[in-house]
Image (cartoon, rainbow, N blue to C red; front, side, top):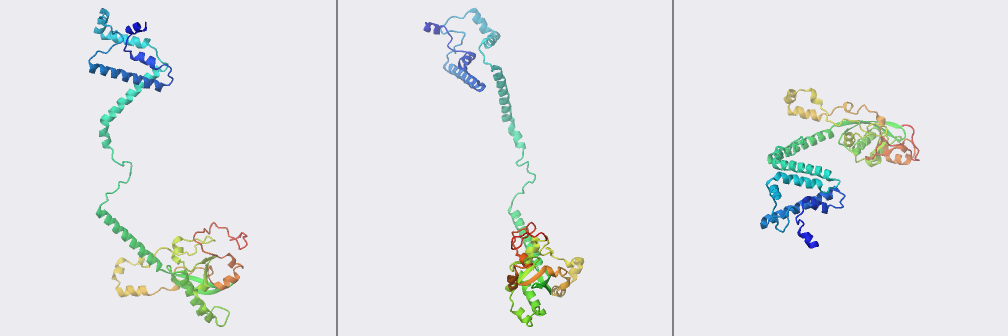
Length: 360
């Protein structure tokens, strides 16, 4: 019986019939789309095989028994509009899932997107050529050539030499440092002429000579005692900071180092003074070489140098042996050696016992 029924049933099913059999029990819309695409691909593949083999493709309206076509069939074949109406009726009458409308809308959207992509793929090449590389970059890099590299190297070397020359000029600038000798009381010392590039030990050596000339001390042979004193036996105390011997004054001047009281340790200008700015260029050119050498050799008066009017008590020259004996007594108890990594402005000052100072 089953064989007789299969003889009179259509062997090639329609798209809707195949979908109704393969999409039973589906829940997700994506699964339905996937099955529908597979059914369409299968039908197209069968159609291509039928065309290649030359055998007519069986349709659901015809059986494989070779039954002659009826007049109704011929009329249907001659009128394609009736076939379209019949197909629409089959689609309406067939089983549909609850999300069939959504699938059709999504399919239409996909077709629109595909057509848009095709348009972009077809005519987008010319549009992309209109855009320039790195169009968002405001500064366009220059083309690097050998001449440009040589020019940049020359400019860099010129700037380096100018910087070194300016730095050497700053180092060679003389300043005045008034000071006092301290051994529990302030003993007037005088003013020492040094350069900004000099080290601390140079200042101490000159102050030692000043102490020997003045005969500072209670002993009768004070000058002889000063002659025996070495630079390592002296200390330079700037405010409450002990300046090490190996630091130069330019380090504190360029870095604007601030002490505990919020005052610069060395308040000097970091630029080269230009005393000849008031002279015109013509006057400078009219000067002869001997006059220039004479002007460079003559030293200005100490009182005219920068820093000559500073407070002498701010700079103390202390004997290290006296400091070792009295460093537990104020004010030597609050002196501390300079540390470049310490911020003296935010530091809380304490004595040797750890007690905080409530006064500055």
